[in-house]
Image 1 (cartoon, rainbow, N blue to C red):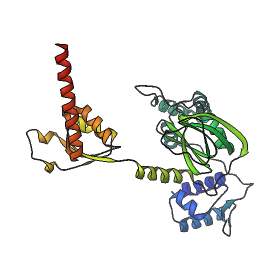
Image 2: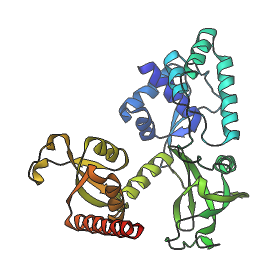
Image 3: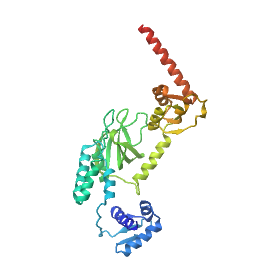
Image 4: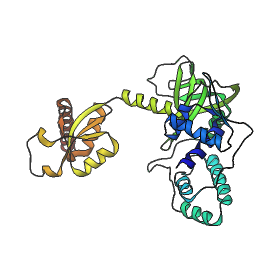
Amino acid sequence: MKSDRLLSTILLLQTHGQLTGRELAERLEVSERTVHRDMDALSAAGVPVFALRGSCGGWKLDEAWRTQVPGLDEAELHALLMAQPRIVGNTRLAAAAERALEKLMASLPGRLREKAASIRQRLYVDTTRWRGGSEDLSLLPLIQEAVARDRKLKIRYAKAPHKTTDADEVAVGSETVERIVDPLGLVAKGSAWYLVADGASGFRTYRVSRIEHAVVLEVTAKRPANFDLAAHWKNSTEEFRQTWPRFEAILRLQPRAAREMKMWHPVSPVSNTARDPEPGDQEWTTLRVQFDDEDQARFIILGMGSRAQVVAPESLKQRIHAELTSMLGFQNSASTKVR
């Protein structure tokens, strides 16, 4: 509805101070022409919105003017509470989030407060793994402080040993480096948190659980003009996917094995014409599966035993056959010695 969009426009300008017509159009998912019409409507309604001309221009509200934010309706409350899982892995942040929610609950009218309590009883997020603990996020509040205050960070980071040394790092151990970075934002992906930062070698992404030590420096961080955290994350993750190692195999799988494979690996269907049909073929599925490398494929396929069969490539079939022959010979030899 237009009224909702006009309110969203006001709140965006209050939050960001100044936005271009293109930025408003992208955030509101409308055309720039619609943005201009909305600005005329706001001005006619007495909202002091004005345009700044030039290369650094955009739309802006009078700094002395503020509007009252309307209360949440039931749909907005439901979306907020259901989309707000408990803060992952850190008791301090979890406690702060809980206090914020309690304040929100206390400010709600009676009917909505009862509804909110009912919604919260229907959501619980358990971030621990079945076979181990959760991410170590003990340094997350400190890193969050650096991000919020735009302060440089000095970190000691555990990285993969095969990576080369960057210009902005000092080697501490075979897998640990020290860096001074400009923190630009935090990204939560699943149960993991990542710090996006800038340094002498450009943008880097650091997994928070692998930051062993961090110090907030009383030096203002440099933030690139017009940096968009969401856009940067989407672009960098897509680039990462493009460079991710891939080994492709065509497998025939029993139904349960096929379901397991789809849970953990990218797959695409393949017709069963690659081989002569056998009894029970209609219960099997032929999939094109992507693995990190041939070793990973061999390990997983051997673990599935008779529930998986390699169709291609031939090199993988030969490795599986050689491994099974070796295992059988080893087991027969061990049985003979026991006798």
